[in-house]
Amino acid sequence: MLYPSIDKILTKIDSKYLLVHVISKRSKQMVEHNHYQMKDDEYVNKKQIGRALEELDKGLITVVKK
Image (cartoon, rainbow, N blue to C red):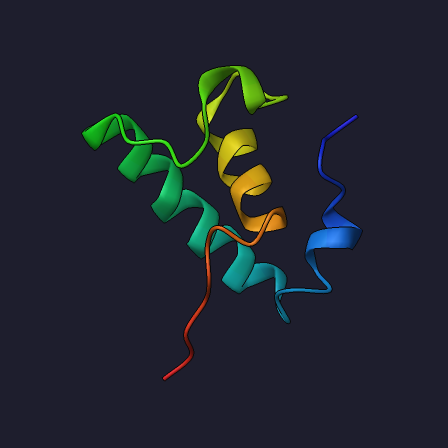
């Protein structure tokens, strides 16, 4: 089961397409810059996609619409 739940995250972001875009961009940043917003032992997931979802769920990532 995916943590955090997609249904829970979609309350913060309107569109699944926007969610995919934001999470893929953040996970690529994690790989390229090795920069994480939480300590390694605070993450439930081991992969960058899951970690990006966790950051979004905790409010560490904000989406600005233009």
